[in-house]
Image (cartoon, rainbow, N blue to C red; front, side):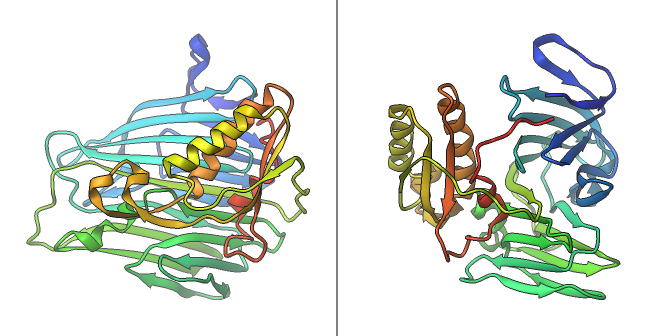
Length: 358
């Protein structure tokens, strides 16, 4: 995998330390930045379709961050990459922001950790704003707890959504047929944490203005008389894109697994099936779910914690293709026809094996 980068290169152990990375991905490119206003950009041709800006802790924006780590790890087969970053916001009690981003064939899984460095508290948190420029024509989004996507045709200036409840998935559609999508990772309960904290609130907004859609995520806002608990926070999201071309039908031996894929039983069954097989496999009728069994996220004593298993499908797809790829086989998924996620960009991209990044 060839990586366009700017900065100082350290060749040891296949790790490169840079100021910027650019990774080609089937006609588009991901650009990652160690500092400045943006964390990443997704570009297709001469156009930018997605920008991720920096988060804000309390009154302090991450744009002032002092970078500590900015490293890219490349897989042996060239089909995936993992970016590790960390830095400190040098104001207030100081906040450390650590990210891990796994990139593969039209998608990325990003985990963000935020903590107070000097024993202070994370006193309010606005996660990374997601901006979709380039004159998108429509947005489809699913609010947690709802059964159907809402669709809004975009024109002029308008507030598409504003509320305390988090969107589980947001899909942005462009005139060219290009689509970008963001979805919550498994940790839905963290994105909804304000509902369980006295004196805390949350606010999520989708606003279209000047040809771009902005997704704002204020996950934690505290009343003036509330002292936040002393703890760190972790949030995970998935990002995906696809052009308007048709996807080929997945090929291989078909199988089905139901229920929440994050359960220990489901994970064991899938891994056993892949290890026994020497042929390509197709996971049919895939239907991601929001499950509440806290045992699935290693917190059995918590009773109920809502989690979304789309992240597990992404991870299983990567793992299974590494295993089956050793014998020249592949692993793909096929969404349940007519299901609520049948048109998902992220899930649809899992219908082909990972391809080499450029």
